[in-house]
Image (cartoon, rainbow, N blue to C red; front, top):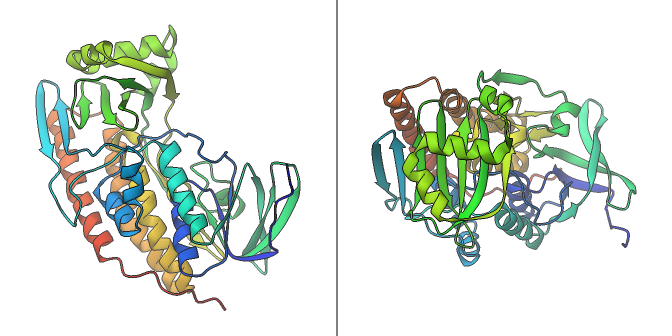
Length: 388
C-alpha cells in the first residue's frame, strides 16, 4: 500500500463521504474550493438505510446532473406509493411536479459511490479507510483535523472550515462541543432485509397495532422489506431476529407476510435497535455539521437521505459566502424543516397512535415535503467561494 498524498492546507475538510458529506464536498469543489474528504469506511461499502429518496432529493440529483447515473445504475422508477392502515389501503400516484415524475430508492453501495465519484470529478480529494482523531483549534476556531490513514500514518491538515458529516455519533460534534438543542422522546426498533420476486408495485407502507412495516423497491429486482416495533419488544424478544421479523411481519399485515413468504430472501436480516432523535447546533467558529451529525430522526418517515441532500446545498451556500450571517441562514434553513420533521417522526415512531392519528401525521408530512420541494426549487446557483 503506497503512502497517500495530503496537502498541508485546504479550504474545507469534510469528515464523512456518504450522502451528506459527498454532496457537500462536490458542491464546494464545483465552486472552486480545495476540499479534502475523510471517510472511515471503504469505498462503496454498505450502511444502514431506508434507501428511499423523496421528491426534493430526486430534484436535487436531477439538477446536479446525477439522476441519470442513478437511473443507469438500475434503480427502478417508483410511480406509486401505498399506505396501508389496517384493512384500508390508500394508493397515491407519483404525479409530475418540478420535472420529477418518479421516485427512487437506490442501494447505498450505489448512491454513495455516485456522489463520491462526482465529488472527485469536481476536484475534491477523498481518503477512505481513515479515522479522524480530533478537530484542531486555533484562536478559538476549528482550524483542521488530525487523522490516521489505513496504513496507520498520522496526518495533520489545516482548513478554513471543518464539516462534520460523520453520522449520529459524530466525532466532529463531540470535538467542537456542539450542543443538542432539541431531543425526541421515542425510538422504534427496525429489522430489515432484501427479497426478490415480490408481487407488489411501488412502495408500500403498513401500519398495524404497535407495529409497522414496508416494502421499498431497489436495485437488482430486490425490495427492502422492513418491520418496526417498540424497542421494549425488540430488546426482550427470544428466538433470534429471524423469528421476531416473521412474527412482526405477520402482525403488521397477513397479506404482506404471504407475499414475502412467496418471494426469495436474499442475504441476512439487519437489526437496528433504534435511536432517540435529536437536533444539534448546526455551526460555530470554523465548523459546521450536516446530515445525521446535525439532525437525526426516527427512520419510520424515511426522510434522512433527502434531509442530507437539502442541507448539503444549504451548507455549501453558507461555506462559500463565508460570513456568520450566511451560517445563521444555514441554521435557520435547517431548523425550518428539522423541527417539524423531528416532531412528526418522533410521534410516528412512538406507536402512540390509532389509524386516524397516523393518517393525520402523514398528511402533515406531505404538506411539509411540499414546502421542502418549493425551497429546493428556489435554490439559487452556488456562489463563487470567498477565499480570503
